[in-house]
Length: 320
Length: 296
Image (tube, rainbow over all chains, first blue to last red; front, side):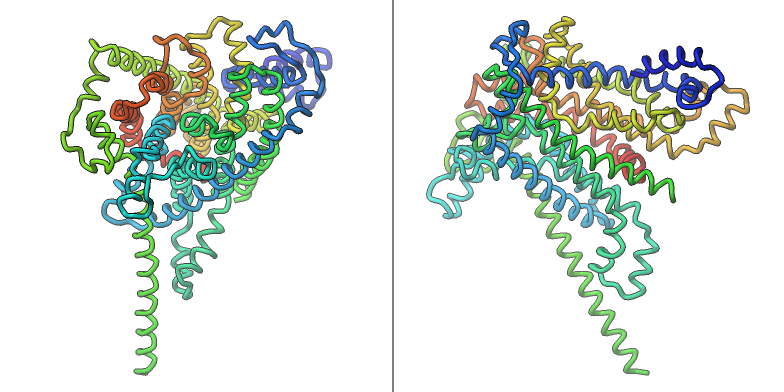
């Protein structure tokens, strides 16, 4: 894109030399674009083209096997088919529960851990390192570890419950429609709260120590100090962290895919796993593309808030 | 006089008690979080040193009666077919992740520098366009990228993965590095320029060394992201000798569904490189997040 604007403006500049305005500014800064060019070029190939292609494909009916020459234009049929199907609403509900529960609990746990770790004590570094590990290891490994923990015959949680006399036989965690989603959310939170913790720990370091001391001198108790001094300082970090978590959760795939594959009877299908199954499992590329476009629209809305939160930070920084 | 002293000392003790309450609550909470975090990993390790028979007992052997390293030996033995596969997957993952890391640093450093220092038209737009990449799920790009990769003949090559992973790492890398460059005083470069350095020389000799922690953090992030990536590798690669670890392990254990000690050993081995790397370099990472992401 930068190349195009560059050469266009060059041509336009020759035509209307001497005039000021955007083209001239672009021309003056032409060397600056060279620094961003590699990044933008990679992004264009791997992002802009796929987005365009997905939108196009969503209006077509495609035969299996990706013989895309044979695709048939069907207008909005794919969209109406999705919005009137029952599975769509079930999957959407699952996605909402998954996203809200994972984001909320991960953030609260991560924030609380960051606060508890803020004061120095012996072994703090080691503890912090251990708490971060689940976030670093592969989600595939995490899925297998938890699949084994939840195993319906030999899983350790079931065994503990039986040993304590709380259950007569090991319960089914991920093979039962009612418990599968909460069980997977526990795994997801296990992997995600460390991210919130790191972000909030970094944020806590920016809270001015003098303000806290001043509040203490004025008689504010621990809760008041947190609520009136610490928390307002962390509002931006919190917004960014929550948005990043929400987006990551909305886009989750590996944990449900490996642990249950969306089952039993769609109870743990979320949008992404469902789209993946439609496309690569049932080869219904057009419908999958239409799903993706809907998802895309939702994410654009979230993205709007994300950018606003980020640029809000920039503006505040510029003022400071 | 004495009454005043008394009440103030009373108030002090009461306050100390309340602070201790918070502190104890914090400690108990940390212990609970430690258990939540660590117990699954401990159980993974304990299972990995059991025999297949010992792992499937009810009630379970909390501590293995006969600890054995058989599963690890099997995975690391190049003579054994399991070991051959595992080592090949491991090597593939290492190659893809390292190549991705090097390329992301090469691409992200100049871009972040430009976003931080120059004010060219469209700078904010481009910056946010890059960041927006984070918003979209892999699945949206999967079908078109698969077709694209097929068209340019990259399906079943590691090149397809490296190119794709590059775009995952870049947004956060650029964002983090930009924060770093924002914090390096422009005057340092200006001084170098006055002393006769070109802009490029000033960048390489002054700015690059100062931003080394940011570059290290960027590199860790790219490496871990590439090492753990699953969905593209799962889609783009079908030949057994090309697979990376996450996909390879999944494919292997969907055929041997009851070998839980082997699966746990493989999960452990897969986690070791990224965990070690992260623990060694985590202070850079936390610092980069503080300076790059949060102070922004």
